Length: 506
Image 1 (cartoon, helix red, strand yellow):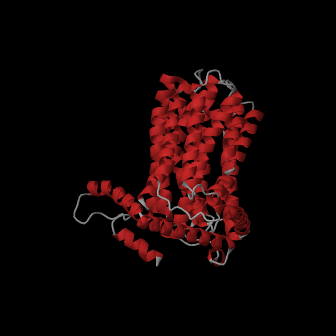
Image 2 (spheres, rainbow, N blue to C red):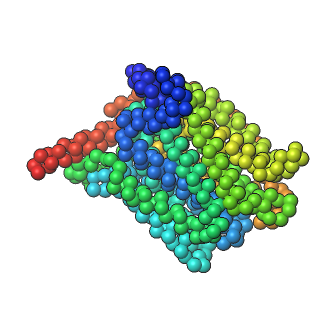
Image 3 (spheres, rainbow, N blue to C red):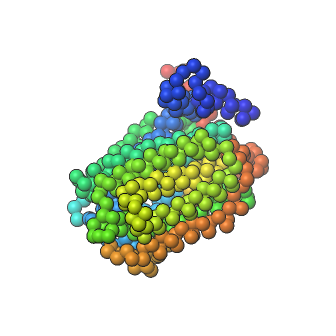
């Protein structure tokens, strides 16, 4: 039945790839994404689509890319710390992402005035706005104070992310045929926002300085506050709500424990963790190297660094299109195997660049680093998107936000391990602000560890990306998690009925 519905959508011209019946190819190419977005608005709700675009496009894409460039220069030029130290400090920035199950529990079982999602958008926006203002306007901030502000910004983004992800997970369960489309919307919005952020970050850092440029990041949190008042959400009936909170927390925790015990859930979760953890991060060492002005280092300018990342954002959108058009119908195991293989192989471009072999081949640094960025971004998107689709397929009904947050927490732990291991490697190899002689060894080790993750590919299911993966007993109304979801639906319907009754009385 779902396949019939999905084919009907494609026949409607909203997700199809065929030429227009009587029109030109260019017009059809322009109109096709418009039709696709209109289809998503019709099927999922316009405010939901707007929320995805704001959170993924502005809050994660634009702010995340702008943050990456501006913060790198902030630690390098304002705080003047060593690359390995920056890697260690970045561990604190990832803590809010590790705590995503906590934010998920809050959004699932602690409604505010009858709403489970809207208040958390408002709170995250206010937290991000104040943290950014202090960081941008504070004079002579200590390293500790700066870290606290960065953690505040990261927490704001994480709360907004888990809140919109709960909506995405619920819609993925209600309409599984649209799960890849929702991830395509997330990825495209994120890539477009990143393109704008990267394209402007170098200019702002050059003219305002790294600290002043961080003030631009106050705009996305402000938009989150507006989203909290704008996004559509049914108000829950709150009779005896306080007495039910503890019970719902208990049910949510038991539901997570029950769900994670199923092999169909913990096996792919373990693979995703290993895939991320084994890709150790050497970013700070490479950043300090290619922005170092002393020969024979590349000595890239601030504007050029932003431009390269902007080109990478375009490549990331190309990766989204490749996945959406050609890869979303492949089984999970097949696409993740080849994506991980390419992820390891693409790291050889970094190694070639660090060893300066590109100059021996007659390829200038600017051309080669742009090529490397494009390849890594395309491969990264093709690798990440099926992981996100797989994660949404593992969420039980009734605790979508909590369990999706748990899965994202596992992924964040993987990235935390990668950051920590990278910091130890950079320090062990004595990679500093001025000494990069052993940087190539760190990059080589990273590439080998990426390829080693292929040994765990058997943990990924062979199912298609539109299949239902959870066992029937988790989906049935008899399970405690689904029962909690049914209770929430009853509260929503009762709240809707009460709202209508109140309107009639008026």
